[in-house]
Length: 245
Image 1 (tube, helix red, strand yellow):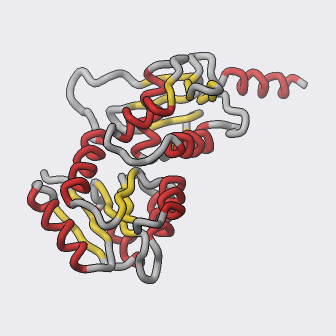
Image 2 (tube, one colour):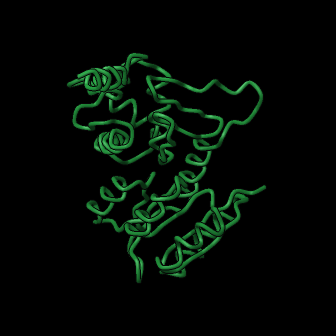
Image 3 (tube, one colour):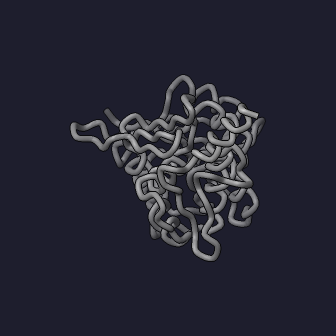
């Protein structure tokens, strides 16, 4: 079955250009032209990826991204104006997985679509890796689920990839440059600030106190690491001590 892409832009010629190139690659393509219909179409059609323009009528792309992220981790590539650096940063902060600046090369956009779908594809073949465990945190790559203290945590595709890499190598320090290249790809035009923003969002979702993290810790001047099996135990012990008091 072909993977389904939802293309959203208020400029019909851009929609048709992107649609044509995606169809040539064998994808099924859905289209929308304003922000008011995107969330509903996403629920109904369950696309595998959304290409979302920021400047949309009625509801802008940033708000659409916020609404989708409240209920879905579908990968989102945002289309931004050349001088829209602030919008790009905000888009990444609220959960977009990548962005492409207008005017863009259709070939580059399709390459990014392929790369994201390849990285987020679920491996359901026999012999799939066992779930990863750290403290009360569990990541299952076969079901693409993260569970913390018995509750499911909704992550974007990039957040999931980051956490999977860190949990797969506990106590190993990864530089920001390595994470940027490994998760976003060598041809990604962002900066290491992208990594910091995604780590910050991850901490908000899995840490009791993001300002004093117990899972993902910063190694000053180097990068980030995930503490080993003892991560999270301090929180539980503190809670037990408090109960005794």
